[in-house]
Length: 478
Image 1 (tube, rainbow, N blue to C red):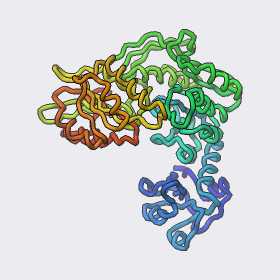
Image 2 (tube, helix red, strand yellow; image 1 turned 90 degrees about the vertical axis):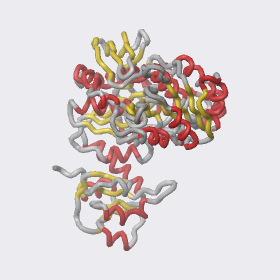
Image 3 (cartoon, helix red, strand yellow; image 1 turned 45 degrees about the horizontal axis):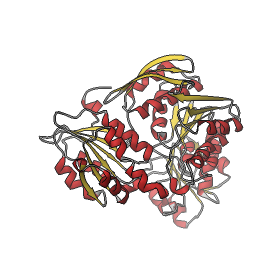
Image 4 (tube, rainbow, N blue to C red; image 1 turned 135 degrees about the vertical axis):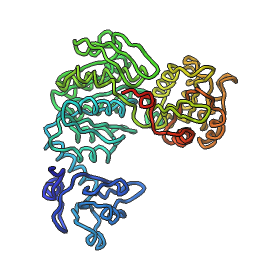
């Protein structure tokens, strides 16, 4: 197998100097804990830690070489080095070189919600049509994007990269690094409002994805979003050769004709840029249906096989913490957990509650929402949390467990018969929730990452004999 990087290629890309024996690398890593044998270790200096501290450990785990800026005798003794003025800039240089040496058609995905799920779905459907490379996990920031690019093999046909932001100006340099042929914005919503004065400012920040768009490239936009015209104008100004819209709007190019929403899947009829198509989605929820239109619009823009992609969507699975469903075989009271613990904002909270409302608990069982604070919402945080009561009522959620100072406002706004337990932190919900669960209940856990909702999920899964199987696998479905 051809190596991902040779020493000569890394030196040419970074302009660095080399010490030690010759080497080749099969991967790139910035974390000694997850590094695999044969990786090039890049010693990045972060806000909380300095990768140079872990160079020796990286070599112990089998690193082929280390890209460093601060050199010590101990590093020299540990293994081969490439020395550069700044390791992060060296990683950026590797990303730029990897992007330009690959003949791939590249998609960049951003949006207030749905980035990772859409990226993973594109990875899945395009992998069946040629060598495909995509960002790992949610590697969408100033180090995650260049790292994902640096890991892209030269023979890649399709590249899919997620780009995120918390502040204005963060997407532009990453988009210029990725140089996408297709730029997709899933939607624009009121998230990260602690750092913006308006949703329009968020739209402008998301539109920075067009700053790196190849001239004549394709912009894919949500026609149902109120900021569509604003985004469309930015895409045109950036030189987009084509704009493909998606949604339920009558003028959408990727248009939803009909949908049947079910507990564990959705059945969709749509017209994708003039082609009628019917398909099944392996993950439930109207928001997933909306994103599937964007996925298929991407497939069309890439000149890939639309029919094959639509068939593949039947095998779609939710990424970890973003809607994963687990059947927990707790003795005497089996129940279902929907893991939405990775993150939360008002838009994704509404979507997840709607999906919970579509579930079918067992006889005399309940739909239970376990909710933690949505963070970074700024001055409107209390009002936005209180407003969650509306989708909860609409979805007929039976019981709400809540934690965090802002979710306390929601909890107090609920009818008394819908209140489960409130606690200041997520840890305080675990024992009462475990005690309250009954046979056939469906429990959805959601909150911002900083609210630490994942331990609740772990505690619920630990009640079962096998906490690793999703509903689809337990049912023997694809």
